[in-house]
Length: 317
Image 1 (cartoon, rainbow, N blue to C red):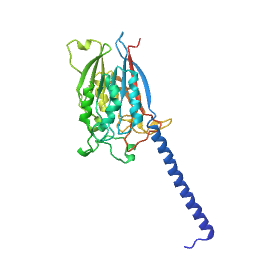
Image 2: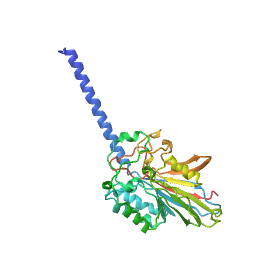
Image 3: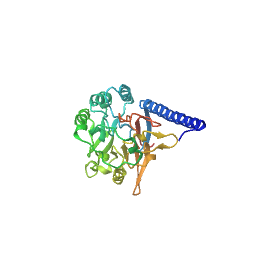
Image 4: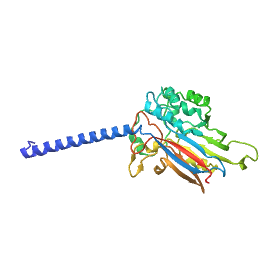
C-alpha cells in the first residue's frame, strides 16, 4: 500500500510519539533507580518502648540488627554500624542475613567489631549460608513460600562468622535455647534456623529448677523469617517478645500504602515495625526489622529506609 502524504505524516507523528514515550519511561526508570540506590545509605534508628519487665526491674535496651548483607567496600554502612556502639546497648540481637558477598566476612566482622563488645544473641538467615544471586524481580510480586535452590558453590563462610560471633560472647540460638541475666532480669531465649529454607526446629525454653518458672523472667524468641507457622509456635509457647527480619520492610514500598510484598506469608501491613501477633487467644509483641542492607543484585530502597531498632524494655511504671 502506498501512503498518501497525510497518512505518512500521521505515521511519522505516531512513531515520534512512541519513541518519546519509551524515552520518557526509560528516563523515569533511571531516575527512580538512582533515587532508590541513594536511599540504601539513608540509615535510621527506630526507637520502641515496651513495658514487659517485672515491677521494679531496671530497663533493658536491646539493639536489634537484621539483614546487614555486608559486602566489601561498603564504607558508609561500616561507619554507621560503628556509630551504633555509642548507644551502649545492654544487649545486641542479630536476626540474620549478615553476608551479601562471598568475600564479605572481614568487612562484616570489622563493621560489627565495636558492637561485639556487648552481650549478644543471633540466628542465621539464608544469606548467612548462601550468596545472593540474580533473580527475576517479578518473582517478588507474589507471596513466597518456596525453598530457594542453593548449591555448595554459592556457600558463604557462615561457620567462620558463627565462630567470630561466638568468640565475642554472642550466643548462637540456631534451633537452641539459652538463659542469661541482663540488668538483674533473667531473659530466656529460644531461636530457630531460617524458616525460609525450612530449617526451623523449635527447641522450647531453657530448663531450670522446679521453681524457675515462678521467678521473674522474660521469654524472647528469635527467627530470621517471620513465617506465620513460626509465629504461631512461638505465641503458643508463651513468648513475651518475638524479633525477626527478612522482609526488608518490603524494600520497594508505595508511599501512603506501604509494602507490596514481604517475601514470606506475613501480611504486608506487618512488613516492618512493632505489632502484636495473635493466635489461639494469645497476643505477642512482634518486632520486624526493615533491615540494614539489600541484595547487591537489587540495590534499591524506596519509601523504606534501612534501619536498626533500639528497643527499650521497662516495667511500665
